[in-house]
Length: 373
Ligand code: SAH
Image (cartoon, rainbow, N blue to C red; front, side, top):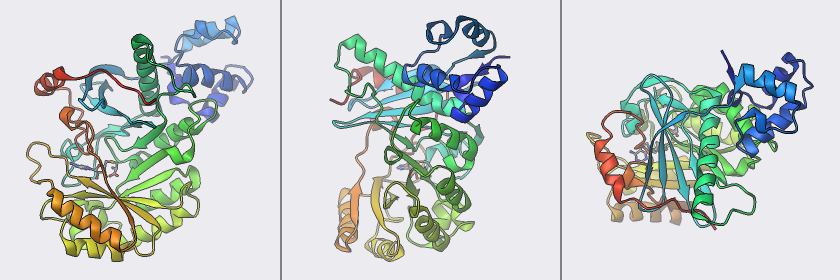
């Protein structure tokens, strides 16, 4: 069986080169062809000797997950459903803005953490994604978007890249798939691959404390923590991993992480659930909770999905909550909901292959893909 070179980060690829009887520096050439230029056909890799190209073609390939469906929202957000085998689909979302293009990447098929307000959780956990399936989402998106940009004649970005930022905020808990996620992060940061700065790669976690420490040592990138509740009783209920790693431990882990983080703050995500965690007293508890952690707070209006059992907080409730937090001296933003008309917003990624009809119909009024200028 052929090996998929998307599964290899720089070190692993250098080791593979040695197995092939080649010099380790060949890995750099390969990384550039694969990840910088998006080339999958070894014959096009002209600075690699023809005989070695032949060997590679016989035993290796470069393959990202196949496309099952593409939806473009009225605000330009694009969602791809990608095939990861045996009826499983994962979702990847591209969010174009004026000054950046953000790709939201999945790390698992389903999720085991069972947060009560998340649609991915309702599927249960199926499996971890491989390195190639994780980085393959970025590889796929760059290639797809570059082709589209050329097709419509839109000007290219100065740096030649369309995706400028990555958020590990798609399906799954990235820190529960630690090794594969870290290898994929290393490729995102590698100058021979995507060359993204650590500040432009954000990993979001529900708070797996020991893995947060490991990430700090292995590959510190910007960190977002899904807080969602300002006290243990409520967080136990809506983010059940809290029973294992309660808030005091989580706050301490955040501060340890900041020792090596590329940014000098943690982003706390806080989903606004009507009547559950959105009252003024919750805002005051939140301010007290995060007192010792340099942070920014991002309020996420709840994105509904069928049978979720929750409603989005009213605009007034969100703004009142925001004002209490802001008056206490914190930077607090309300996340703009993007792509909700194609179910691409936070917490809506379900990835199932079945029952797409309604979504496909809704996507028919969709626009073309747009790019940052
Ligand atoms: N498991 C990781 C990565 C998922 S990131 C984590 O929990 O951080 C996705 C973000 O969207 C998380 O902050 C998650 O809590 C939030 N989210 C989940 N369901 C949501 C919903 N229905 N509406 C708004 N945000 C939601």
